[in-house]
Amino acid sequence: MQRYTRSIAEIWHHWEAHARQALHPMAFTRFDDHQRVFAKLTSLDREQWAAAYSEAARPFEREARAAEARGDLAAAGPLYLHAYGLYRMARYPAPNSPGKLAAYRKSQEMYLLGARSFPFSVERVEMSFRGRAGEGTHAVGYLMRPKEAGRLPLVIAWGGIDSFKEDRSEVARPLIAAGLSVLLIDMPGTGDAPLAGSTDAERLWDSVLDWCAMRSEIDAQRIAVWGGSTGGYWAAKIAHTHRERLAAAVCHGGCAHYAFTPDWIEKAQHGSYMFELAETLACAFGGESFEYWLDHSPALSLLKQGVLDRPCAPLLLVNGIEDSIFPIEDMYLLLQHGDVKAARFYPTGHMGYTPETMPTIVRWLAERLRA
Image (cartoon, rainbow, N blue to C red; front, side, top):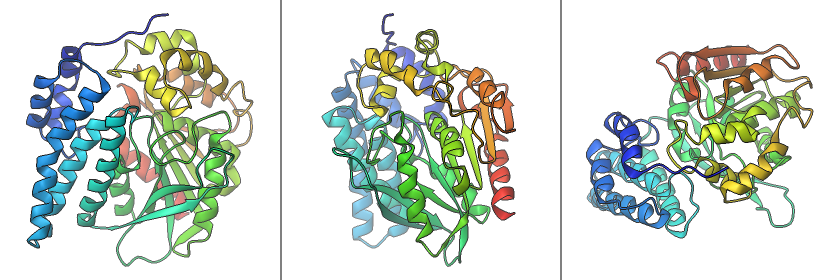
């Protein structure tokens, strides 16, 4: 099996509409930002990519700092977030080179400065992690709550291989509007997670849930989880492994078994993910190459691990039936095993995005957490 690589022109053709509408992964940015960067790119070399987008971000960072220095925080907030969006693109899809890692740290700095303008409170928290030799000692999260709120149910949310906790504001906003609190974290192998993805990296949630139980403003009896894209894999898994600690779970666009087979890995190379899909998946699971993902991913199958026939917490499955990144058959497989689950599939691609998708998930979670 040979790695398939798209051209710069192909990627821009696919992403042009995203750039015009500031859609994933281009939130908080403008069309002309990306138009200028792509006009300069001569290859998809990771360092060239990081340098080009970091150069685009720096003027907005300078403007933001100048606005803050003169006391204009209302102007500084959007500028910091604009800089964050471009530094995010500079590290996209994963911080797997020195330039991309540096851009990721800058994106975090800009995000937290910009988040001060959000209409809800944002607290950076560290959660002790009891790991193994070579693993980190804590996980980092952002606890988000309505200002001056009391004790609330909580949704712990995370993204996939290319959407880290800083990139999940789109999830936090509607949940907070529904009267819930939110803890944004990174799934194993991404962002500030203290361990790589593996066949038992669900250990991360032991520490996260223990931390939640110690916070007086969190109702530890009403905690749900929401994992997006590859993060949906972990949501489906911990709905089974941690079911007694969860009131609900959402697997949004996730994978379970067929996504880890050679036939699907070959097919997905030609799908809607623009570049380095297998390499970025490998990066989240302890490797870096296409070959690593091909060799190691079969062991991740929740079917082979015997997880799917165990009892699970209330679990909602959401995706598009035309998903070309993860097969819809993985969702069908989850429905065919274990406890009865809820599901909503849409006639579209990865994650099943329609105007109704996010409101449907938020309503489902709110109903279960308010019960």
